[in-house]
Image (cartoon, rainbow, N blue to C red; front, side):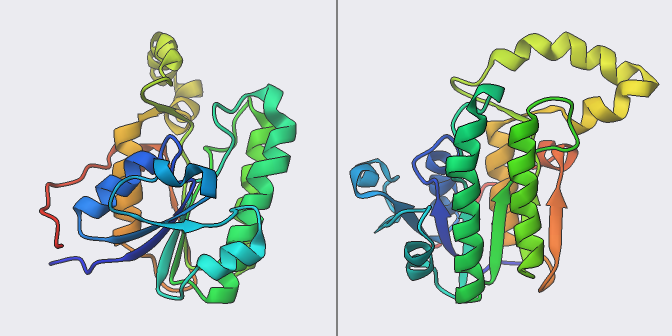
Length: 228
């Protein structure tokens, strides 16, 4: 069955995921607007409509949002590490708060949020902020999809490949198997496929759907000609 074109508003449009997600959405015939600061306008992928605004400003977020939109919220601190706890509070948390407020006020059809696999033994400040973001989404009663990757492999993000032997060992041991699967590595291609599928397959109205690492790793996209 043909999937109708979606109206998609992407925050973090020029980041690690955003600049790959937008072309994938456009190639499948979706209409994409990218919220961006004026200084980053030229970095918005070709084919998307740039909307100038600050993703940390609730009023500007609300002005950019339309009721028919699927909002894909990708704003976040690049290369998160324990040393960036203050930045998580300064950027990641206010941005999701602004996005949730905009989604509520505009009665958006679908909110897509990239969180993080949890529970986890490391990155506690990052996990705490993402868990707060999830709590805001639930409290607002939004129709939402929450993706929970752990580490996303791709250009400039490959050092965890060194941990592959340890993951294999952990999956082989019954006491550590569940954690190794839940905190497994995914690729940027997996993430883009999972995000596109989330946009195209909305959950039931008012419900929150969780997409964990195994589901992300299983995500693929069939080839499809653009509808435009």
